Length: 227
Image 1 (cartoon, rainbow, N blue to C red):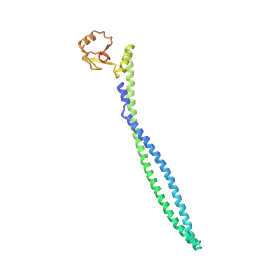
Image 2: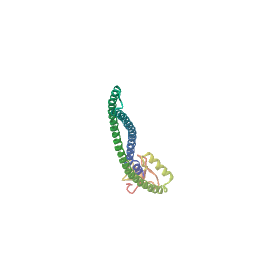
Image 3: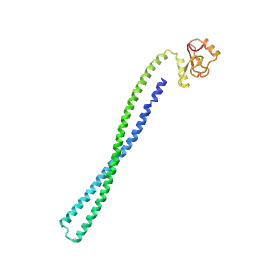
Image 4: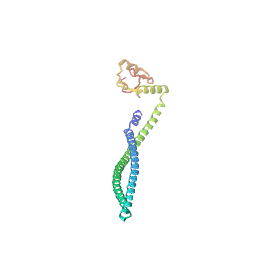
């Protein structure tokens, strides 16, 4: 049961899911930033387009007045022609700004699209790993449930004071409260018992609790103990 619980705590899929979740959160943060950039640049491009169209409309109006001969005064005509030149320079400058914003918007949108694709792949991978994780957890928990039932059945026949001693030793000895005595050796600390200790154990009643002199664990006598 201890081994299964350790396996449950250290499933590689658990670490993989944690890593995927961290990557997902970081990616979602980047995506939010890019979405803000795309939104801001879209608005900036809309404004740049409007500015260009506004100046172009003014140029068309002034050019129409010049072409129609509506401006008869030579000085006024000279001023208007100068203004048309200024408008053309202004349009060229605004179109450069418009193009720059458009390029930045395309780059931001391209980055956003790439990150969204990456997020989709990440979520797909997380789904696959999560499915494997759930299956393994269910299998281990089912095995643990069966072992708990078996352990309860065995523990029911163990005297309360002996069971309490065993549990206390388990806590103190890294999960091993009792060890088999085989070939004159304690299965817990690997101490080889001397002849005197073996003789004492051999004479002890079958229901007497025997403890290892070295590690203090409960010694379980077996047909291979060498008594």
